[in-house]
Each structure stands twice: as C-alpha cells, then as structure tokens.
View 1: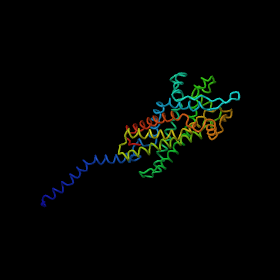
View 2: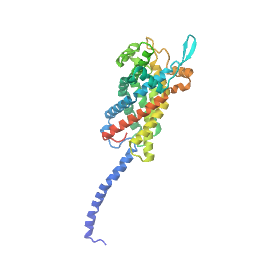
View 3: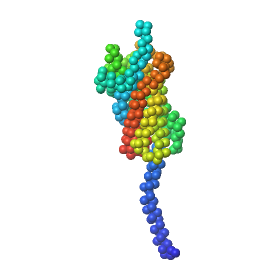
Length: 353
C-alpha cells in the first residue's frame, strides 16, 4: 500500500525514469530508424549532399574515378568490336574471312604494337563525356524516382525501369558528341598501324573535323543507337543496382555497407552488359564508319541497316562481340562508381543512396 504522502513523490519520480528510459532507449530506437531508413531508397531527412548540384558533382567525380581505372577495358572492347567489321571483304572477287582476336590478345597487341600508354588513348574525351553523362543520368534518375514514388517508400520495378530508361536516354543524347570524339580517338592507333592516314590528332582536332564534315548535327552521328544502348545499359545498371540493393537489405537485414554495394554492382554490371552489348556494337560501328563530304555514312544507312548487315555477314552472336570485355569492364566500373559515390556521400554525412 502506498501512502498519499508517497504518491506525489512516486508520481514525480515516474516521469524521470520515463525520460531517462526514453533517453537511454533512444539509441536502439534511432538504430532501428536508421536501419529502416537504410532499407528505403533515400534518407528521410534532407541533407545538403542530396541537393541537385551536390549529387551531380559527386556523380561526375565518382564516374571519373571509375572511368580512369577501367578505361583500358573500354578501349579493348571498342577495338574488338571493330575488328569484325566487314567480316567478309571482297578481294579480287574472293570472299576473305578476317581473323578475330580475343580480349587478351587484343589488349596485349595494343601494348606490344603501340605501347602501354595507348591503353588510355581517348580517356580525355571519355572524362569530358562523364561531366555530362554521369551527372545527368544520376540526377535525372533521382528526380524521376522521387516523382514516381510521390512520397511513398515503395518503388516498384516498372517505375525503376522507366526512370532508368529515361535517365540513360537523356544523358546519352546530351553526351553523344563527346562519345563520338572518344570513339574516333580510340581507333587512331589501329589506323596508323594499318598504314592509313590518321583522321584526327587530338580530341579538339576530332571535334573540329566532325563539325567541318557534318556540321553541328554531325556531332550526333550515331546518337540513335547510342541513346538506345544507354537506355538499355541504365535499365540494367541503375534499375538493377537500386532493386538488388533494396532486396538484399530487406531480405538479409544487412546494413547499407560495402558488401551490399559489391553484390548490387556486380549484378548491375552483368545485366547492363547483357542488355547493352548488341546496341553497343551497332553504336560503335556507326560512329566509326567513314563519311562522305556531306557527313553521310558510307557503310550503313542507319542503326537498323547496321544491325541487319552485322547479323547477315557475321551471325547473331556477332552482336555480342566484345561481351566479355564489356562485362569485365562494367562490373568493376559499376563497383568502383557505386563504392565511390556511396562513400563520398557517407563522408559528407548523407545516408545511403
């Protein structure tokens, strides 16, 4: 039995333990909230690292790191795809099959015949491209994601796919001129070894030559297959990374950590390579083909014609020429990009992307 004189004292002490209990239990509560939040796509509280320009700059910086590290694989992939162009060539009425080299043979050939530094030939326009491409694709996907979610935590697969396709297509269309310059620079070493006169000597020279031959619109030569490829690649990359990350964290209870990033980025790289390689082959061949004085392609009428010629002369599997270097590049590229991107955001105090 508690006396009336004890009641006020007891009642006055009750809030204290409750406050203390609340204070002491705040850590587990906050931990639960953080864990719950981390399974969502964005942190609940706004942070300056979530702003448009900060997200843009972080994306560009992370992409520059990933591009520099994995660029030799991109050069190898491009050379490998071009090697089979015109798989059957006429020589005095005879049809001659060209000999294909694998990824390792192509890479070692570049080092042996042109020098190790040539593995980074064309990296400058590639970095210029990411100033536009990576920044735009991430902020566009982020904006579409928030718009489609409309304040909800759930982000269904079709919405993620729609956001990925839209973001990738827009970003690549804007970055197509830099991509065209990059492909021209990449192929110069091969042209010189074949005794052909070099078309361009630098990124700036390539830019001027393209404009002089085809005008400003010439900078968007091959933009259609380029945009198609980017839409498919980002459908594989952004959508897969986002979906796999949320799925793994939800099913395993793992926090937003490097292990989750590694699993998600490897899956993203595989899906992106599978979906994007055919369009990548078509894009590379259209952008690399010679043009007449009016800037019109001499080998292909368009992406559909290139697709038909490639399959007709080399078979369906020619569309996956260079798949191994594409995938081997995309896996470490995605891993390097997403680890860098998430780590920079984390160091700035923002939550998981």
